[in-house]
Length: 166
Image (cartoon, rainbow, N blue to C red):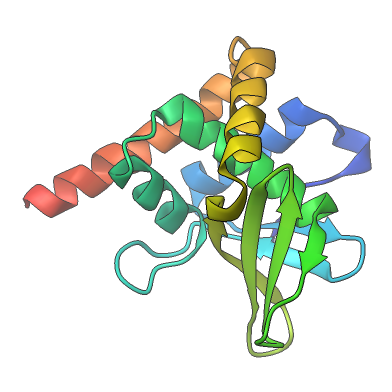
């Protein structure tokens, strides 16, 4: 069973952030509906080479030196891209990229036709993406739901570091 990430009855940025944090805390996947592509599964995923999902995104951003606040903002913006992003051309019909404010969510069609969040990119629009990340931190950095996402991101980063050491 998946948690809907965009429930109109529980609308707003706080609800989106809370549900992203719950995916990280519980491992239970969530669904974000895209207006054209339909439901996209947002899951914890897998880290390391060939990884995908939220854990993979967090791990890569931490390796780039991003703070937990920046990574939490990226996760929120990725969810917005999944929901409202413009579909960019992709040569592989089983892969799509969705752009919103310079944040590009990468999704892949799984067996059975469901779309799955696999990754993230901001290389082609780095300035726009940086501005969007900064705006999320400025607007929500004080909010309890944003702190909840930051705490879950921190837990993932800490557990990844511990598993590398062991």
